[in-house]
Amino acid sequence: MQQTKLFTKTRREDPTDETSQNAKLLIRAGFVHKEMAGVYSFLPLGLKVLEKIKAIVREEMNNIGAEELVLTALQDKELWQKTDRWDDAKVDIWFKTKLKNGTELGLGMSHEEPLVQIMKDHIKSYRDLPVFAYQFQTKFRNELRPKSGIMRGREFLMKDMYSFHTSEDDLDDFYSKVEKAYERVYERVGLGDRTFKTFASGGIFAKYSHEYQTLSEAGEDTIYVSRAKNIAINEEVYTDEVLNDIGLERSELEIAKAIEVGNIFKLGTRFSEPLGLQYLDETGKAHPVVMGCFGLGISRLMGTIVETWSDQGGMVWPKAVAPFAVHLVSLGNTNDVVTTAFDLYAKLKSNNIEVLYDDRELSAGEKLSDADLLGIPKRVVVSEKTIAGGKLEVKDRRTGVVDFQTVEELISNLRQ
Ligand code: ATP
Ligand code: MG
Image 1 (spheres, protein in one colour):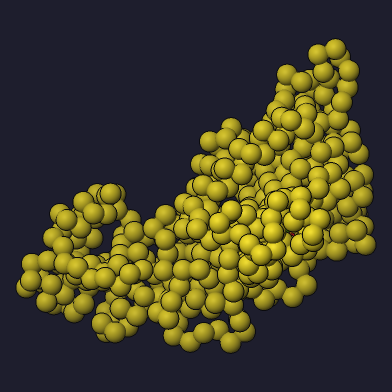
Image 2: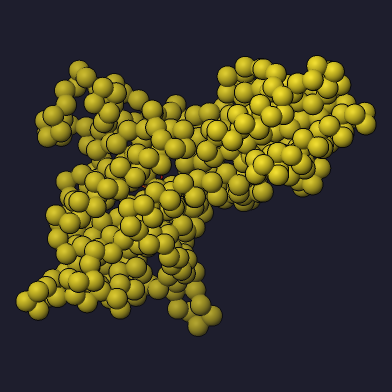
């Protein structure tokens, strides 16, 4: 893509109404637009990142046999009354609205109830189980005081998956597969070394749920981590009893701030019983279906990546989720520079390399500082100087290391 064709502009100044690093940088770079507190639009560059994260998550969910669907955002009050989750005294984050005739509706804050209702049409016998279904959905939650940028939205993107089983054993089996899939996701988006499976409160069915917590000063949660054992405990369940249960000692744990980037739960029959989702076993006897639910915050993950991977100059995208692989920057407006840069742009594109070409007529200083801000992993400069030297100047955004490569070398390095 040519930068002259990108409608978004960068800005020098931080927005005055944001305190989080992710919001400041994403807004300055034109990746997102703030509509109001906790509500962000994703502009073309931001959307590219979001789609890359989704693609990774989709691949990992499909790999463990899950099926993708999309449920509705508008929710039926009566359904949620059956599980006692409609009342504002029980769930205090609902956004509610009304039909013209006065009937109340909710804007989906989670999707257990509607999916269980759907499954009643499809799950009849033990032969129909297990089922694993997931979606990418906009969730609406009336969060109290969102101040963490896209990490805590009132409207945000979540991957939520729900599993349906004949037994707890079968749920346990799938639960471990999801744990591995989640670990691969965090690894692939560049957060593997600082994201920990964390024991958290479990609700009514299981003793614990598991959160995935990424260490960060920007986190709203406090956890106790054992780096050696690659496990953590959320402070909300940090007691001697729990330590004992998990087999950890206080002395091996360090306290840290963290961001909850995922949460997986054993639901048991919490939803299948009140909603009447049953299956018939081999003998024709009816049982409630056993369920699990597996959330992963897609937009929060994007914010977490920015919090983790940024420096004075701006964002530093890991390759797997970067909006482009290369930022080609031409410096100077001579014919030579313009044709050489455009030829290189065409060549990279024909090699299926995702390239953003900064063909704007701006000063070198402005173009280079925008390249730092946007954070594309490789910056390639074409100038009179590089043309005279016969090689391209290639800078790695993360390490800052600059080297000089021929076009062929550049292409072969990028294709690795
Ligand atoms: P939190 O404790 O941060 O409020 P939660 O426990 O209510 O989150 P879940 O209902 O378990 O969250 O949702 C699954 C995942 O969705 C979370 O692990 C998190 O990554 C993400 N998420 C939850 N709330 C938000 C939000 N307001 N904005 C962005 N992502 C969110
Ligand atoms: Mg949670």
